[in-house]
Length: 442
Image (cartoon, rainbow, N blue to C red):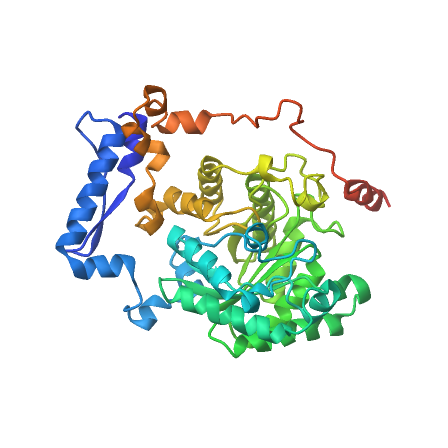
């Protein structure tokens, strides 16, 4: 069977009359991929028009039974479902003029709720099952250091962010994750008591609101992440913990496998990595975490929410040490086709919570959802305006553009940067590799 036709065979159709998912397993007619996809979309539109009840169900799940809509994160993962996470917030909102670069604090949840709400909705439409609260760096010590917020408290931001996330999550079959991240206090005082007090204060804010589970994210020392998990587990809610580490380990040189073991022993239900490095590097790191858990005889669900930029340097400090950070990263942007490869690699590695972090835009999340559409049983609403693997280009007036309406073209393309004098790699400013080598030798 032709490769591009075979790829379209994995597309799933919702039949409202029987409320079953039917997988297309063969296409016998010799038609182009673009024509096939357009006919398929047309048939779906006709079916929807004939059954308004199903149309409402497919596009608006607000009328679903709350228990059906709110199946918990562990229920979904235990059932083997693929959970698609959302993407990055602080970098997107900085580019849109709502977040100040530097300390990246989330006061926009209070000052510009419409901007945060809109980005939530774009991720939901792209296929996200989880909407994270926009509470990155929302500890009181970070807010004080930043100087960005003088008349808004951390509690106000946390509570407003929870309300926004819940409002949008209720528009679809999505869960709300209350998110905490690393604190300046850890590096400054290294006091377990002080750091845990900060996490507990945030947890208490979240528990006043209707969140479904917690995520610890953007922590580069496993010890601090363990402290966060220990606090959040007292809530009785599921806890996911993601570290921003490389395959070399955390900033203290703790290997990924050991990091995962420590997180699970602390009570984490889901473990993985987020941010700092590109998707395929992060997949490698999670594989090492998985191996560590298996060796220790421990079990946990795996999650991954990587950086949306290419980082072939694979430096321990991640993208913040690159000379392009934060205002010239565009030439390193991951394409939607890179995301297809990433999502498949993650799935094949046994990772079932697949999302993104800084640099991941809604179209990246849509690419994840499209890659795992067969496993999930549906395409996201945003795919109504997107031909899989460029199939919609089949209708273009220019023949050389029509020739790109195939999977092989986009999978094998090596995109040009358009900058002849630019290097393909940079020299990171950090010296963490040397520090780690010295520590190992000692």
